Each structure stands twice: as structure tokens, then as C-alpha cells.
Image (cartoon, rainbow, N blue to C red; front, side, top):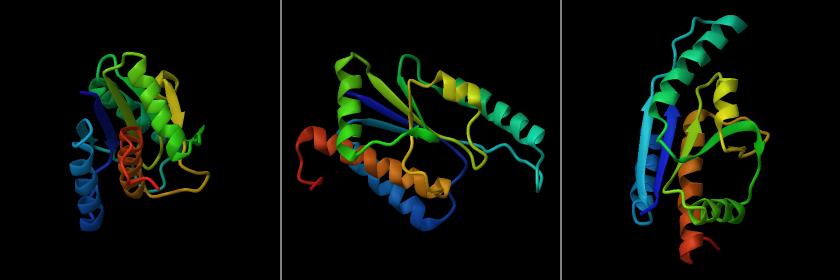
Length: 160
């Protein structure tokens, strides 16, 4: 069975986000093996300098690399990524599966972003929108879109 990993930097605290994530986690398990890994966000001072942010992102990059599943197709969520429709995301995942990959890994970075070296390492860069969303909401949105993509591939009635 295909395995989808989501690596998210930062901890969810709000009950409504936690409930939404749990709902989509449960739904996804009907289509694939699913793992959500939560990594700690590097602590920065108030009003950090560019150097402090770069240092924090480099520290997070090390943690991310340690958790990347070997051989998985790797996608980062980033504002400069490519925007896809739900059908295009479903097709992209189907393409990954057809290419013989047993897993896909999606990364949501911290509130300061993702280290450029991690972005360069990615097989694909995905953007939801040019708008800015809270990282917690982006996690829910990603899980919903992954569930929608899997249901599109399965021909279910969820996607209308």
C-alpha cells in the first residue's frame, strides 16, 4: 500500500485544528498508509535578524533531513511553488505511484519558511495560493487535499 508522510514543523495547539487533522488522518487511512511527523520549530527571539532566521532554518533543515523517508517522492509546500488543481494533484500522485515510488512525503515548514537547501532537494514544490495562510491551517488544507486526491483516484463521490 502506498505510504503518504507529512512532515510539519511546529506544534498544533488549537483544538479545532487538531480535530480537523484527526478527521482527515482517519479518512486517509482508508486509501493509504499515513504518517504525520511533527518537528519542533527552532526557537527564535522576538524580531530575529536575517542571520538568526537563517540559522534557525538550517537547524530545522537538519531535523527534516533526518526524518525524510528514504526513496520517497519529496514535495515541499512553498509560496514560490507550482499551483495545482485538486485533479492535477491527484494526477501527480498517480504519476508518482506509476513511477514505482512506494511513498510520498510532503513538508510544511515553520513560520519562517524552509531552508533553501531543503527546497532544492525536493522533487516538487507546491503552492496553495499566493496568499499567506497560518501554518496550522495549511496542515489541515494539505490533509484535505491529499484525501481529495486519493478519493479522485479511487473514483469516490467525495470530489464533485
